[in-house]
Amino acid sequence: LAKTTQPISMDSYEGQEVNITCSHNNIATNDYITWYQQFPSQGPRFIIQGYKTKVTNEVASLFIPADRKSSTLSLPRVSLSDTAVYYCLVRGNFNKFYFGSGTKLNVKP
Amino acid sequence: DGGITQSPKYLFRKEGQNVTLSCEQNLNHDAMYWYRQDPGQGLRLIYYSQIVNDFQKGDIAEGYSVSREKKESFPLTVTSAQKNPTAFYLCASSVQDRANTEAFFGQGTRLTVV
Image (spheres, rainbow over the protein chains, first blue to last red):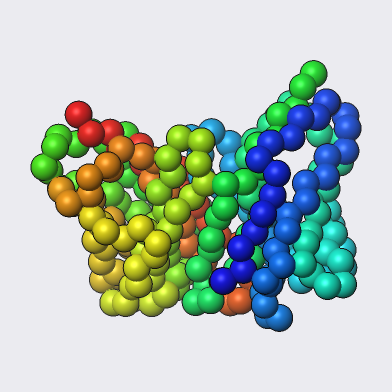
């Protein structure tokens, strides 16, 4: 099972670009990388997934280097409403989703 | 309107009681999951089910039980054997496709032992 490691917390200011990096050294060949966002007292919400290189959607971008041992979630021009916990996941066997402790992003005015 | 519904939102349990948390989905997903979240912590997998009438233990299954008699329902029972059940419980569902890593979560049930 691929374990993920990400910073416990990050601070940013409104309007800045935020990059959160996740390490997953033991990722398997067939594993996808996924990021979720969670607000207090709510269930996590899917943000983006990728396998290699770069993926972009209306919310974020995901950068994955060739060796796939890490990934970086990029949030452009964050606002106060982006204050949340962000989880990096590598999908394990049997479709299980393993969540680590996540990165608590605090966006300041 | 498709989604996943958990009930109740808040639940209080007396010591020694069993309680059952409901989870229903109308997304036609094969896989369903139960997670526990303690304050300031990440999610820990309790049980998961890939198909009706089949389920597997996650990392912290002791003191919990589940059933999967219908595709759309995956109730979780917190038994008296669970020594510290106060937590936020989240149910999720997903398709059975390794290339699709999007899981849909309910709004959670906050269980408190009184």
